[in-house]
Every structure is written in C-alpha cells, then in structure tokens.
Image 1 (cartoon, one colour):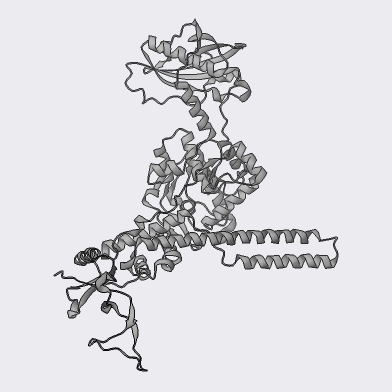
Image 2 (tube, helix red, strand yellow):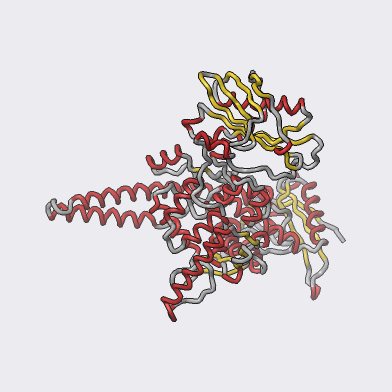
Length: 629
C-alpha cells in the first residue's frame, strides 16, 4: 500500500540532543554541534526542504525496504516524486539501487555480447576516456541531464588546453627544425667550436620538443562528442528497458555542436595550382578527375599491386574487404566477386569478421577488371614457383610477392607513397570510394546502383557523403538546362525539315543538328541522322555564337514537332564537346523525337557518346585512358 510520509528538514547546525531532549556531550563534557535536521525551530516558518519516505514490500527473508528522498522546495514536488518512484518500483524498477554510473557502464558493455569488434572497441574507448571520469561517481538514480552538460563543457575546456598544447609543440618543432638547418650549414666550413655549438643547440631543441610532446592528445571533435553521446544513449536505453535504473534517457536531451560532414571536392586546375603553390589541400576529402585518375593508373602500371589500385578505383571497396578477399569468392568466368569478409584493425591487432549485412554484396566485373584479376593470379603463380617452399599460402587474392596477406594499414601507406611519387595532387585511399561513386554517376548510373556497389544501407548515405560533382557533370547540367528552355532566335528555313521513314525505329527517331558559322554572325544549321547522310533540312540565322545556333535549332525542331503531331522527347546540347578553339564556329545538338502514339518512350535506351557527324570538324569526345570497369 502506498502510504508515504512527508516532513521538513534542513542543514542547520546547532547543539545535538538525544531522544529525551538532553544535550549530547563529547569526551570533554562539551556539547556536540552538528546538523539538527528535523529539530530545527525554524522549520514551521517555511524553512528547510521537503522529504518523504514510504515502505515497499519486504524483500526475501522479511528485510525491510524503505525508500527515502529529499531536497524538494515544495510539498507538491515531493508528492509527485514519491508517486513516480512508487510507480517505477511497481513496474519492476530497482528504486533502492545505490549502483553508480561507472559500475553500470562496465556491466552494460560486458553484457553486450553481439557487438562487432570495432564497435565494442569504440564503446570501450568512450567509457574509459569520457564516461567513467566524468559520470562514474554519480548514482544511476541521481543522473540528470545537467551532469551530461557538465561533461561536455569539461571536454570543450580540455579541447582549448589541448589546442594551446599543440600550438606550443608546433613552435618547438619549428625551433628544432631551424636548429637542425643551422647545424647542417656549419658542416664542412665552420670552425670545430661552431659546429659543436650548433649540434648542441639542435640536441637541446630536440630534447625540448620530446619533452613538450608528452601528454599531447588529439582534440575531441564535435563528431566524436556525438559518437560519445550515442554510446551513452545506448547504455541508458538498455538500463531503462531492463531495470528501470534511469528516469529518462538523458542523452537524448543533450544539445551538442553541429557536425558538418566534409564534402568531397574535385581537384580542379585552380585547386591544383593553389596546392602546388602553398601545399594546402582545399578539403579533407578530395577526388581526382577522370584525367588525373588515368594518369595515376598509367604511373602505377608496373607496380606489383596495379590490379589492386585499379579495383579500388572502379569497384569502390573498403581496404579491409580487399585485404580479406579470398580466391574462392571470385569467379572470372561469371565476372563477379563477392564481398563477404573483412579484416579489421583494433589496437594494432588484426581480426577477421563478417561485414555488416548491407555490406555483404556481389560486385559485377568488367572484362578489363576480370583480365586484371587473371593477370594478378598469373603473377602470383610465377612468384609461387620462384619462392618454392618459402611461399606463404594465404588463399587471399591480394598478397605480397611471397604470398603473405596484406595489412590494411600497409595498403593505405603504400597508396599514399605512390601518390607522392606520381606528383599528382594528394588523395587518401578511402577517397577512392568517393571517386568510384562519382565515376559511376558520371557514366549515367542511378544512385541506387551506386549504393549497392558501395554496400551502403541507404541511398541517403551514398548521395550525401560518397558522391562528388565533377566539372564534366556541372557543364553537362548547365548545357542541358539551357537546352530545354526555348529561345526566340529568328531563323529562315532553307530546306523544310523532313524525317524519313528509315530514320524511325519503333516510333523513335534520333538525329543531329550541326551548326557552322558562315561569315560574321551568319550561321547555317543542318539536320542529319548520320555524318554522310542526306540533309533532313536546313536553316540559316543570325547569332552571336554557338548557343544561339543551338537555340535556333531547338526552336526549329519544336515548331516542326508541333506541326507534325510529334513529341520532342529529349534535347542534348553537345556544344561542350568541341575543342576550346572550335567553339566559336561550330555547334551540335542531338534530338530524340517520338510519334505521339508511341506508348513506351521512356523505355528506350537512347544512344550515348559523341555522334560521328562531329568528326569532320575535328570534334572529338574526351578520350579515356582506359576502359571503364
């Protein structure tokens, strides 16, 4: 039965009295002084705070269970809290527990049996480095959101100190480097005493740097604070659902600094020039253009792991997935490989484990990728013969020359070194996943296809994090947008447009309008299905450049479709395909037209690539260094 008792008490100090009202004396016969609690004479005048207690059902063996709480400014608050605690007790909560948060966190992580190894390692780091030092001494029942706010405030204060420490270390580093240069300059011509003094100055500066680096720690970023809060939220949810240890999931009420995911940036000529001049990367995540990608592949074509770098670029796997890939999960005949294992690194130790469910996937191989894998297997077989009994049979696809499996961190360091040797602007190994996604989009694949290729759980992750916008895509988008807006460019019809029956395939016709400057601002635009075919029609117009010629062609074809009961399905502006020096004198537009009764226009795969008609004027598509894999 719920029968709480409410009373006031305070923290006033005064002479202590026993139950009979007599003063309590110390060993010397002096009155003892202490907290007088419920006997304070001021309590009846609104002094002190409200407290309560109530009895629960006896525990096993008849042990008495009494709940006490206090510190409430109003009686109504005490009554509300008493009811809340009683209801929690009736629901199975351990309201008498004195367990502290530190003990609870350790008990929670021990009970989580199904965590992946890397996830567990991250949780343990958060517990040991943040949750135990800041929250471990607080009783679970007393935990409030203010305690979490204090923890994150303390972390930000530590960050400020760490930044100052790092700046100090940077200054010591510069001082050490300057001392080393001064020492090197004395070699060969300075007096012996001067060389000794310079060497001593360098050694002193180096020792000062080593001392200054002690205790140097990384700044806890906003992203790390969010991950810490996620760990805490998971623990509190577990404690609430299983044992009712916490009143609420306080981690869900915390306000943390916003996290901005680094947006992948493309190495444009302007950014490359800035990097060469200053050595600064425009952003933490950088992506090569197709041209730079081809240059890298050409540079590493003689590297033992050329086929691995090729796979990273065109397939977009994670390094742990490539390090774990066995030959049993590769079919060169059926052109696929299956990602079902990964190597993870935890505290410099390697472990094999299955990837997340969304990351288990089968990747289709292009003919070039399959040829590369076959070539690498042949190289492995040659090395197996040369090494003989010393060859290590790991069963892995990607290995060292002696058959030893690759360490994921070694793969990253090897790639970084190759990029440095190539002289290309720097990218990280993980940035090749961004590159693979971007190249897939540039090739016209749907974002869903890219998601499956990279092994992501949602399209949102792929779209927001793993795709970049190449200059070619921006240019194509700009031209396509311009092409769909009709412009009133005056023109004269020299030969009416006629689409012959031979040009139609299942009610779809594709043809090109090629414009050429005649003299001054006069342009002639002719329509053809093929470079050497007869003209379907021709117009002339007065325009300032290739855009006006293209707009005139669009207006001409729209007028024809309206008059002939045809549907203009697609307009593609190919002006950007011309060489820079040719763009002033030529234009090219591709049109896709359908008969109005055609029911399946969208189902048709439109032709891709550059039409042959352009070749007569030196027009060429960007030449890829390699086939797309």
